Image 1 (cartoon, rainbow, N blue to C red):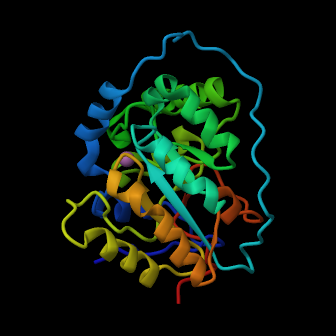
Image 2: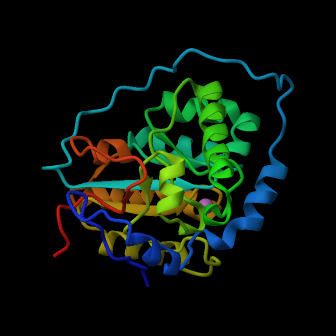
Length: 272
Ligand code: NI
């Protein structure tokens, strides 16, 4: 049931022709427009809402992993921070797995403490635009604003600036890439975790991910989805049992220069 999209070699051929493929890709994020709005509405404004600029937060030490050699996989969680994000951090902490959160900018300030915690616990933050916007329909100025406001909000909250971005709804094109000015990180494994939960659904989802993941993959998940968060510890355990290192996107691509605007779906020199 996995929607394994065609991989793009990271060493060559990362061309502009991807845009058509992306536009035609089943939009795994497309379902969640209303949920994102709802999540944003649900977030509580802290008593002291005044933004403060903070010094860079020290990340927890992580083991150096060379993903050119090791079996690495990057779990990515989109559309937060939301009401399940702290629980996910709680569940991940004892595993010492590192993941990447593609955050929606307007949800950062109301959840600034969570964003700081993400960074402090060694995870990575990616940019998922300010308003979960459908970027190809926007002017270049508006695209830049979607990205830049989010960069500033993350920096204000946690003292770091995201180095990668993920276009919402998987829709993008070369113009979006140029305007955004950050590497576009897509995914190679999509368990469609937003589908309604039913009996055994969580177990099947973990089974599918573990069965279909290959070294270098990027897995698309959503931390605004409770069952996904609940499944995270088992997913980590079972991937490790198959010899995988759970790494952030930047660690996955360490040693591979990521070009601004270029799309990346996984780290593999070429598809078999
Ligand atoms: Ni999304």
